Image (tube, rainbow, N blue to C red):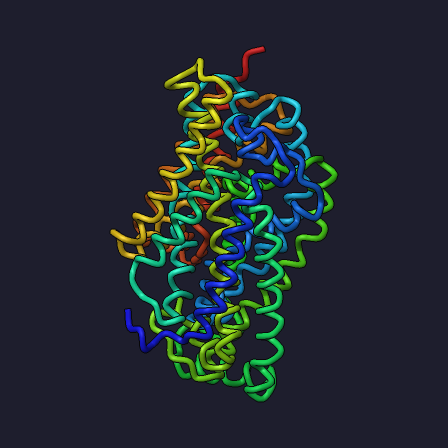
Length: 488
């Protein structure tokens, strides 16, 4: 750590806000009081969150610190292709509106806490629900690591390097999550979202003004990508159309299969709350589009960032005064704490309800179940921290991309089972295995890149690997459903 590189004003502002949300995290256990020895109280906030809280909570775990760091970095690197996150978040909310209220009603009626609970309730058995739970846990672990990477990037932008700040942040996150459960990120999400909106609105207003307006920003980006050549540019190339569209569609279908997003949904107090949020959550899509534009602004400002993930902190350090740099860094770091807490809770719920209880200790009491989940949430965060400290950062990024392919494969078991009783465990299991194996194989053939090109004679069709595997999953499930019809 180079003490001379630290800006004392920026660091003081950062620490002040970080300390404030830490206090909120511990105070949250007394907010909307409930018996935290019960898993549904600790892990789902007692299923009592109304429209406003749910809006902040779901937005807080869906739009993360890594989103703020990675989306502008992708746009900075590849141009228009990096905007696939916009149609993805446009597609996802009609899916939420149509599906999630129905899923909430079933889960509320039958006291399901996880997606694997729902699968077990619909189809019975314990091994296939365990497979669903393992899929969710493995897909979530690198996602938590990415939040810590986002925090690491902004702390480095303040002049502090090394793992010690991450370890301190981990301890803070671990203790208030253990103490307060889902109430902690729900309360902190209010502060996080307000801060992020302030940062983004200030950035998209002030930065272009200093660079000569948006016309100059787009002209500079266009000239930059033209000079680079290849397929990058501020407009999509025809060869990118299907990859762009399939990434958006596949990501949208997978988004609310993750344990953290489902946890946010199931913590709502009613199906009507979920529908209302699906109507108003697209406000975050506007925010995401503005965040993505920071990539072009960095090009226009002459920012040289290596790796590209440093682009937002470098841009802010160049344009804004120290106090605002500290405020922005705090906003992004807090944007890591909220989803990381929800992700660890979601993974802990899966482990306790769908692995430990059915496979190890069927006679576990409700109080023991809650205590077990609290302990597991600590180990989940410790595992994510290990990703960052002991493995290359790229490893976590690659695994998260692979996790998106995997989590999409539980969609038929969860969503299709809501609408038909013809499905049974064996066809769904074979479909899941097919999707997991095919998706993993194609991903490794592409060196863990998300797109694979299908060839039909001279015709090439680049598609998102998760969607290819998902299509195979559906076909195999349908075939085995015909061959092995469900017993009445």
